[in-house]
Length: 583
Image 1: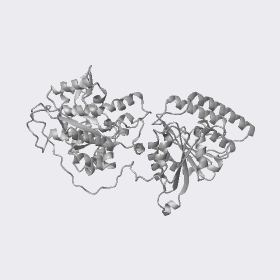
Image 2: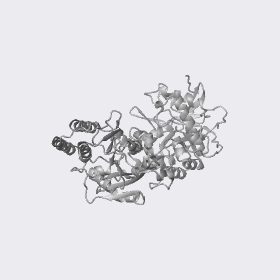
Image 3: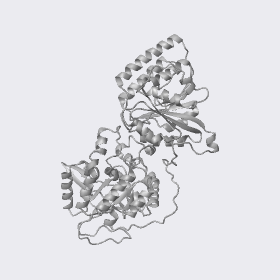
Image 4: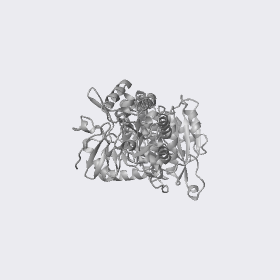
């Protein structure tokens, strides 16, 4: 691999010429560049460890409103920009790209998914470029000539990406942030310049960089939002004195201060993502009114050519599904033969989780059909927030949803039992409102509920199970308790405290349960084990809850489990029951 850097752009000089293009040779003043990253609030790098792209469907899409805010602001400031777009967004919401191009802005690629290029091989990166380019051009009707990586910036070891871009016919890249600590030629790379690659010539458009106490930071994006306004203004003024075009950027979600709060994110991630969202629009507006900006295509004088509009092909995205209403499907022969199954969701102070739950249940119904016809029972355990009112708003008009409310707060197990009693089916599932287990797994768990099985339970501690992002202290506590139950009770299960289960209603209704809270989930399994019921474990993945906070009181829960264990041991000793068959 070889590369050489051509002399950077100077004020009043011609911009770098690229093969086959005529560039404007004279400018009376530097023209600055504005780029905008088009992504939704849940797709950002700060949440990658919490929100997998397979879960994007769960979260409230706010991209349309944040884009509309952005377009109105750009119109107000008479500014054109380059929008770096995910191919996934183009495929899922093509109308948004048409709005962008109809306003005279440029569209460029940011890859298909919001993922790091370091997770891709060279061949996978080529495939990703092809897929995203096709999706973006099909949606926006405009040829794509530019690229920016979706996650982070290019390191010196990542420059092979530029070879692939040049080979694929891209005209420019804007993925390089030439920090002094990483690039030996950082000074020469800080302005718009050309890379001569073996595959061709590629113009690099790096974001402009400021410096504070020896630390390099981009003059845009998170820096524009996080740093003091006086520091950013001073740094921009210093950059302008170099005579080079200012290259800045922001994300559309940064203009949406009302977006949901991901409480599971760490302190640093929350600061990185949420701080000063309420000030960002004003800061962007001030910047746009103080300086003259255009798109990368404007400054490099690249023609934005239309593409031939073909027929829209169906999406091949693995996350896309035809959204089904949360109500019974039209009568068809397959649906008539579907086995009815109820799904109980206990809710207590879950106002923040309910919108994601509504979208998740739509996906569950879609995935279970046509083999199973899902009915939902949501039980409000006398929440103190707006849970009950929001439940009515989201679910009351759904013919296959039943809403129940306790007269007083009774605990999660009591809510599950209430839901079981209101269910009209023999098989009843229970799941957490925060979807800490993926409820789509029910399509794999339900076939395990054969005639001789009374309970199927999800098991993250099963040898084939997994745990993601759960705090270590909670994991140690839960695993220790499960081992204790495994030692003293006849069923050799790996997990005893999961709420994600499938019950046989006639069996569970007759259990002599005394615990109503979190302890009740363990007591249910314990009582079934003492009765000799067959219990099947299904390996599953437990994830930390995204919204809100856990309702479990740690010390009280530990004491309660020890008390429950003692009672179950005494009950087993009194009955003298032998170990049943369990899987």
